[in-house]
Length: 224
Length: 412
Image (cartoon, rainbow over all chains, first blue to last red; front, top):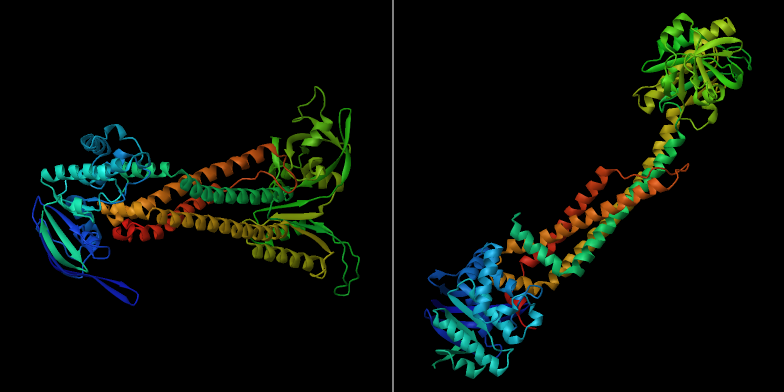
């Protein structure tokens, strides 16, 4: 599903040049669930951003579902993100003035699905997350776990090939974290490839493979 | 671009960010409101002053006979210049470009009677064109006509005040009745209203000039020649006046520069000065108005800038889940157009409403009456503001489109 070969990425900040990724090679099979671990500044979030076509890379090669992802213009990148990828963030990133249903339905708005239809689909996904009764609530009225489940519903609504989760449990308590992992497992079992960035070992332990990154290179790959 | 769905998305954004919407809208509405009030007040001032110029065509020139004050070609000062029909014909033939021309006799105040009612009125024999030159309104009947002139008819056209003083009680219909002027009966054929501010203008009786010459003078004397300059520019009008002056000076042998040999009233001179004044006032209003609009634009841009900054995260999320840069630009742009357009319209309605209120409740004074905004200008200003709003939204929108989702979503 995902193939990356010797990916390099540097950030230029004034006179300073920060070499963040120093040749990453990774192969993720379709339907796999992997975790990426590493200390802060190791480059794991940068890797996730590149995988998510949120950021570009300097050299190397990236194949997503057989499509070469290189030098995409913004419109094309947006299209791929919308069709193939789903994002789950640590801080949920729900739009504060939209209610749960509208948040979930938003990706379909950019697919030009009619309002009625996308709200109906959004309700189905909320129902699956057990949040049907909260459809008309604003994010501020929801608990952390509820917010993250809404974010997951939003990521799923476009039926993506891959879900990229950046510290999905980072803002949640341990009980909720485990519930969240159960949910992600369930989603993975439906055939969606899952990449989770985390620094928690018990979260990483529940994935099939753990990739450890340190200082811009992969240092260790563990099968769990 | 104009899909209903897109507008629903924008409307929901606007609805849920009420304070931001209100602040943006308010500065726009206020700008337009002030502009309308300014334009309206300027117009009111103009209308007020214009009122003072009423009573006589705006392009009229009146030349009356006088007394020489300068020695010329061996002739002494203090000679009376006397106009006759010949001078009238001479002006008619030499001055080019006038559209109405008339001679007039000054007979002054005289006692006029109808049955037992008496009154003292100004008797003004003239040609048919004088009605145009004086810019009067016929309320009933007609003005002096060519047939009256040719056939020396004894007819009279009387002012409103003349009618109300002579025709009283049950005997109010004046047309067709005979009034006695200097012992001669004249048939009333018309009643007029003069817009001049001088009440005496309503106490006037116009007679066919030929009739008056024959009956009261037995000679073809006249006192005044007046004409209107048509569509002539102020310079052309000056040239026409100069031509008339030269012609008369040659005919009556006086120094053309002698200001007292003939007495000239040039209405277009006053109109010109009035126009210059109002050009100044208009310029002033426009400077203030444009300043107000710029203030509005700056307000809108500021708020849009802040709005985009505030929405960086939201925009990042939208981009992460598939929003294209163009859709982000349109979102910000259309929102700003919607707000400025709507708020501009509110300001327009409120401004025009207030002017209407002032107009209908404030008694017109000498210097201020009927404030009204030129609707085309008001609409133009609103459209300008909407475009400005779009422009004000455009740069923040471009900035928003460049937002990198990575940076926007980074946890602080």
